[in-house]
Amino acid sequence: MVRRNFEKRSAAKMSQLMQDARKDLENKPTWMGERMWEQLKAIWNSSNFQKKSEINKRNRNSMDGASLHTGGSIPHRVLWKKMKETKGEDPTFSDFYFRTHRTKDKNWVGIHAESAYEKFENKKIELSSEASTFVPGEDEADSQPTKVMPSDIDIWVDVVGRKKGRIFGLGSIAKTLNPNQPSMRSDSEVDALRSQVHALNESLQKQEQEKLLMKQQLQRQEKEMAETNRNLTFLMQHLGFVGSSSRPSSSPQLNDETDEDSEDVGSDHIE
Image (cartoon, rainbow, N blue to C red; front, side, top):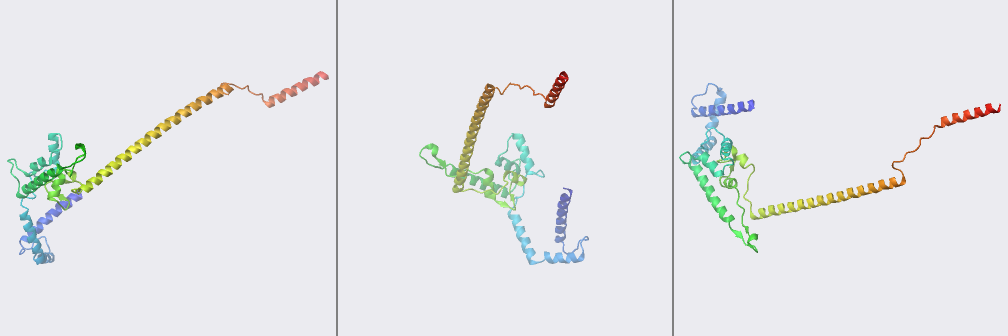
């Protein structure tokens, strides 16, 4: 984190130093070597560099107000969070855009900010009218809209586009509101998605039915096993295997000794 912050600040500082040096090519900066200074002057004076510089200058002028907003140093994601906490719900796209691109007296921060929102509103009206048109079915319940109305964020991105992964007007909140490249889906794509959802629902219902049947079968098996155990217990009790005790058998060695004693007694009696 420290290294990344250091490199970011160093890059910004170096960029500013190079801009200052390019403004006065007659005087070499004290911190730069003579050889490097001559190489940089050759690059800056080249026709290719001058051409690119002029193009970038025209682009900046044509996008007057494009990067302006009223949030100051506060990131857009923080402004979004504050508006959400105030309202208790996510702010609408229009409310957030007005908050970040119009002043307190409701003036736009720039021409580009205003024109972009006007294009967004016109596109939204156009799509809304298309979505309100229904394809008639056999009855009123079967009628479906010709197009599905996309979200405000999708419409906005479709109007202003993306540039290097960034979306004009959204700032740091862009990745949260629109993490993936959106697309205005055609009717065939929407129908295909609906078919996939329908197929998934049918598959889930089938799995649930199979699970229910397996559960019922398992319950029947458990019931049959319990009945079998009861019958087996009753049969063993009836045959006397349960609850009976056997007499302990005498030790063979003890019996032999007893027999020998008996013989000795008999012998003594004869004598």
